[in-house]
Amino acid sequence: MQLFLDTTDTAVLKDLVATGLVDGVTTNPTLIAKSGRPMAEVIAEICDLVEGPVSAEAVAVDAEGMLAEGRKLAGIAPNVVVKVPLTRAGLIATAEFAREGIQTNVTLCFSAAQALLAAKAGATYVSPFIGRLDDQTNGSGIELIQTIRTVYDNYGFDTEILAASIRTAAHVTESALAGADCATLPPAVFESLFKHPLTETGLQQFLSDWAKTGQSIL
Image (cartoon, rainbow, N blue to C red; front, top):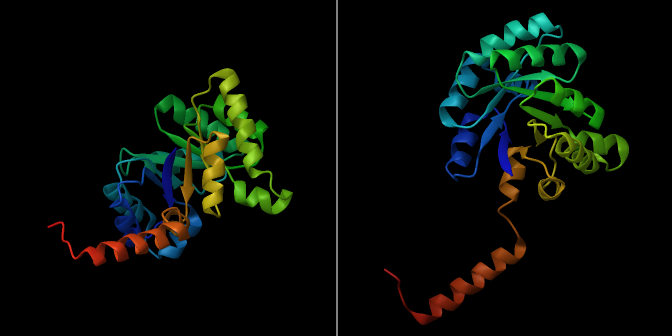
């Protein structure tokens, strides 16, 4: 499963890209607003840091507006993926982007029926919001990914399932088990994937035992 970072903090991104484990980046208007910087500047800098897909979101609510904004965003760098909402207008724009060879991430997906429409429109990615859905339905976000996976496999759709609204490391594992192609994580959740208390205690024990030998590898 590919791991994307959901951030516009380029300092954090640069640090985590150095792990070699970051496959792409997602952004949204809220993150752009928090950055306090011009959107095009932020997206261009992120695209310089990451070779993989970088989602940049159109903010228009009509199809023509999304198309105009999306074409401009796609012109920033070859790895920009235009993000549009899963609305009727968003899917009209998605279908046109597909004809033009522009990659898309259809976001704010909360049902398998919506995901089916996104795939039929030619979306590159669909983003089910599992954490936000769990908040409303007491834990059906992962079930949604499982259902979308079944639907997509039934018909051989190429659209990739991008698990979004990830809250915990458990969400990442569960998304992988459910068949998500990728997941986008806040940096703090990405960092948590490295950690387990038994790893820490085991390492300390090994180091203590090694120190007692008085040896040096170098």
